[in-house]
Length: 160
Length: 170
Figure (cartoon, rainbow over the protein chains, first blue to last red):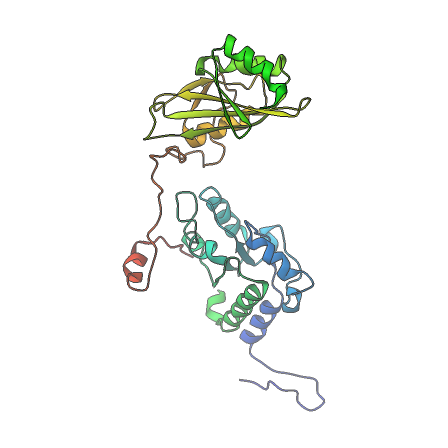
């Protein structure tokens, strides 16, 4: 598929459009601020200097869904929050991805009761689940790398 | 028992036929439900209990006959003493006068009590749900309210439960 290495001194690399677009999407992701519980603390830590998520091209959390393409659901989602979360998800422009961070967002965790949604996948489609209660920053970063791999494998058909 | 509390308790026993109990230095006055507003008025104006720290309820179903107990936690800034007021409420749809006019912060506490226990406060200015969604049915903190859990998926029954689990469509 094309010439993917440097050709002499020409300074030209050829590749497929698919790969180029996926590469740019992977390395410039705008996560949305969606800290709901204790997982948010680990998410902040993953962004701060010790773990430094900006190494993976995401140095800013956006507070507005219209400026973001990745939703990290960090914490348990209550039945009252569920319609709000879905509304925010619908407001995000395509393409968009969702990471369910932690056990509560993935499957309800220890809160198996009337008040908590049993997994955020009941209301929005989830791309990556990160296990842990809460997951350490390394866990979240691993989830993001997993998502990057998934995006790099996306085909041209799916964009439309 | 704190000496500063003595006059208030003595007066209450006489005027409102309250019952006082002590547990590890914490005083609880049990007052008839009809006189709770009067009791709060007297405690605030005459004995300096100027702060309502908490207002909550306990459901004793099915052990005890007056099903609900309402608990008011009062604090006096000047004297640095605490006092608990308690009142028993009977029936499945209990009514009580609001104390919003005495302690304005009771507004939210009473909304929460309505939301969680279904205790109606007569004269409350804005009695609607505060924690649960507005169209919620039932009162979750009552002992006879179902927990409402979903069945947990294990490896041996993963597929059967997965069929009935709601999933989001893209």
